[in-house]
Length: 407
Image 1 (cartoon, rainbow, N blue to C red):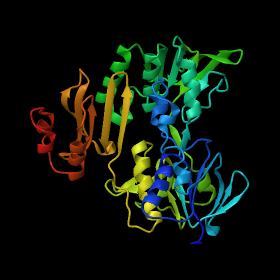
Image 2 (image 1 turned 120 degrees about the vertical axis):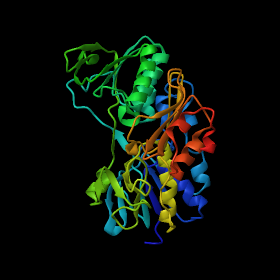
Image 3 (image 1 turned 30 degrees about the vertical axis):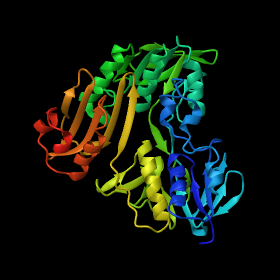
Image 4 (image 1 turned 60 degrees about the horizontal axis):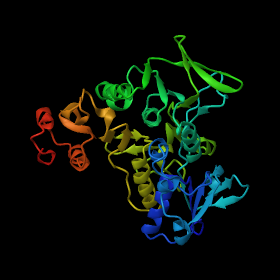
């Protein structure tokens, strides 16, 4: 099998990063990159931010410049996915009916939006957001303003689209089961501050509520019916209820799967010569000493690099600190760390009311997570505090007269 190509199933950010890293690390053999979408690999954050707002073209989201894959002798096959995997034979059956042998295989099949099985789910005007086509359709509907958008879900995608839609002049109502938006990611203190900002910009938020039905007329959605009987008028509905890892290929092949495709610290799966990276990978993280599945773009980059090196037989382990960012109205935020470890409300440095602050989460006197809101060039010292695990006093973290680099 050593004469067979390296194959990457999934041409998103993780897969494209792995392909680039393989070439940078000196692999000169045959390399096939399979992409179900009919586009060259692109990053997804702009789909709910700059591209949706009309501030960037779709081409700005490309992972590589046009022509890069051909120039680097990478066989990029768009519109083609892996239909079945046969680990014992080191082979794939492709969606175009062909078969493909591999010597090493990376599964970077990503995730898909969680679908809600509600009455009326097939009405026109109901949107999900994952692909550039999804974003283009939503962008077209929102661009002129004056539409009534109901967002089901108060996580990152829901909050970002709500902010973008409101900025474009649309009426926006958000619906979430939790009492505090973003609570699972940031806790109640910060989640409430984000919610307050949305409300001040005119977004209506219904918390502790569940949609029960999507009502409409003549095939077009017109209302979202909540479990308390409230009926929310809607020209458009965005369902942003999270994502589900695309594990069907791995499951059918008998690979170990739990919350994603199970992988070790080097992103090796339970099948020989098969690796997993990106949104689909439930990989052991040596810092947490536990599996971690992350759907953020920084994780896709880091795992793409790690997987490529591991495919080459290198001693590679993904131990990067999780990182993500968001843009909502005039909020710019970056976050690093291990929120599941946080055991208390954050220590605030700066003014949370003016939305210029840094928040630190502690565990046993050490920083395990930190986020900066509208304060820049501080991620390096934040990550240094997390990585070092050195004890830091809460009063020192909160003291704006003390440089972070001195703590």
